[in-house]
Length: 463
Ligand code: GDP
Image (cartoon, rainbow, N blue to C red; front, side, top):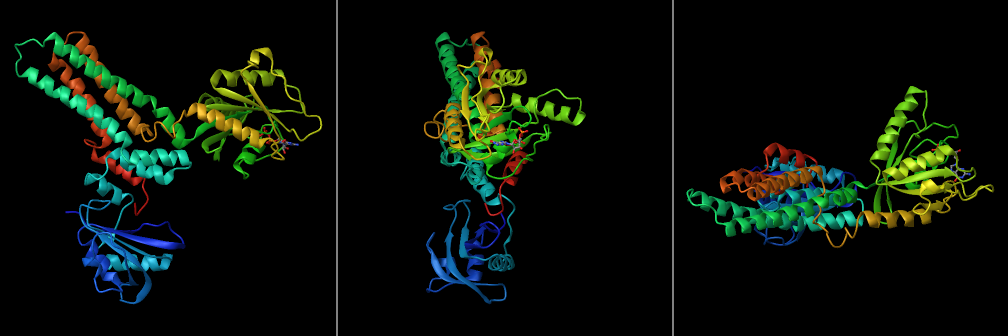
């Protein structure tokens, strides 16, 4: 039997409204202990989810606040248990005293994510939906929030369930065949099984193909700034971020490490990485920075190659451009447009000038940043094709999901290959079983307790 838990569900600090939450047996009674409705019906006898107006009292029975409260009985609640919520004014003192009073009435403090963990354990949500709750809370762009909302609504679960159910049917077939070991599996049946496996393989491949988009949507498009020292990379990063994140000086080689910041531009989330520069150096610290910069470049989804528009492109710039273009889609930024001797740079033939977009701007005055923002948003659209609309909710959004889906795919592929090679159904059973187990892990059907504990520990208290 689970214990009664209580938490403040609203963020710390003063606010318009503060919410206390309770879940578990006796939730309504404990809430009624500190909340007295103005009407005749006590909170513990109120109909499910009917808001009552009343007074909130502390442990000693002294008036704390006035507010609203409701109860919801099992299984018709978020957690699937009896729950109660009290909404008062968002005063940290009031909330904390009210929470003390709830604990005195028999509740204990909830652990991070414990409400959602209970919803999962009671079958109200599967694991991908529970993860969507965190993604929704943490979403940094409207597109990421929409994706999480659809996933919470079951879009991904439905897809996985379809594959799970097809594979379970197949297992039933295999087991039926196993009951008659002397009989050979007839070719027609083998062909049908092969088709089912091929369809699930394709479905899993399609699902795995979404993982990059899912990651880009939630973690941001990695945009790496490269360029000769003093081109204005740090100034640009600061201008885009709107605050001073990197140290800007006019001594070449100041940015010795990579500096990162997340910004939303044109509705997309970008992870901007300023690099130390990629030039060879004898200074060991600078060498370390250069190694990190190369690593950053290797992980780039997009490269912003910054050059000083008051100086002609040098061999070093062409070399950087070639390195960038070899790694990812690159935009050449001609900086310092505000200065009188500014001129648009001329990319060399082997810099792939036809495919290179050139944007001129001034990191100092902000002139041209709007064009850069529009260009970045356009690139983001190519990287995240219609993610916000067509496939909302059906993306794999984290490593745990991707790894489980990959294991499921491996199992299905092994089973399909074995069938093609004429192996008997019993030989295939283990592979299909492995795929089913991986899918079970994905939705939480068969997941290990330590894994779920890790997932829920990422939540905040009160969720
Ligand atoms: P980084 O080495 O590429 O990161 O270059 P910084 O951002 O540190 O800038 C080097 C110098 O150029 C600093 O003195 C900046 O103030 C200056 N600078 C950067 N962008 C501009 C710009 O758009 N116009 C002008 N006039 N100066 C700039």
